[in-house]
Image 1 (cartoon, rainbow, N blue to C red):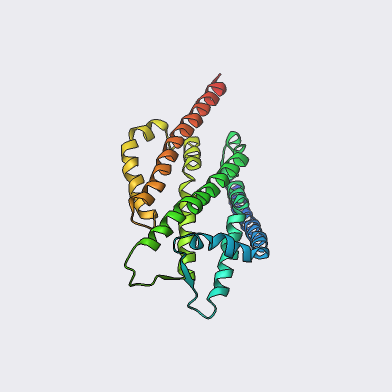
Image 2: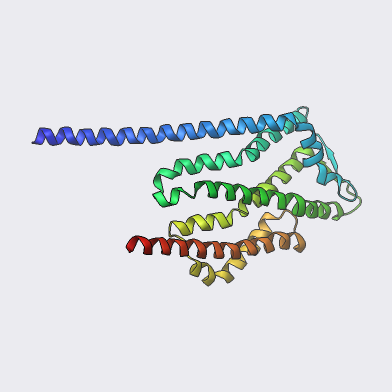
Length: 261
């Protein structure tokens, strides 16, 4: 009996080890597929690299009054800049695929009723992220750049290094993209029972204070206009998140009642 039990225990351990290895294998393939998506996205960006650089990334700098002066300070500065745009552009273009691979990896840990939301979550997560980037690019970025151009003494000639400008644009857009994911994060947390609408309503005043602090940190310019440009959408996203959380919780309660019946 002891020998049989020992063999059985060893068999169970082997199964656990295999399932763990399979888990790692699944993670490896998800990463590979995500990287392939980034490479394909990077190739697409590389094909249109000149219009993207001239007519997208540096367009806001041309539209300031007066236009900003962008300079290169390094021998390989422009080459590095192009490579950064291709890499970051590839990531942005392949965001839907990256999110899909993440959720497919998480899917086995979800309940059968929850895994069906993966496609919708990927779509709306991608939409929210890209909407945040668009908001930063079309609204926040022009406001911030015009503030920089008008601020300061005329004695100092403002000439901005290309890599610093690029870092500024990318950090602002990515930060806004992440912030706009708040409704989807709320939906997921409410689905797994961590977040409740009553909790969000109770701490709404605290959330407003945190939103104002975040707006002050994330906005590159210290003027109140730029902070409000991010603060107001953040507050609206918080209110939308309460509604989404309430809707998600309601559907969850209905499902529980159906199962109990």
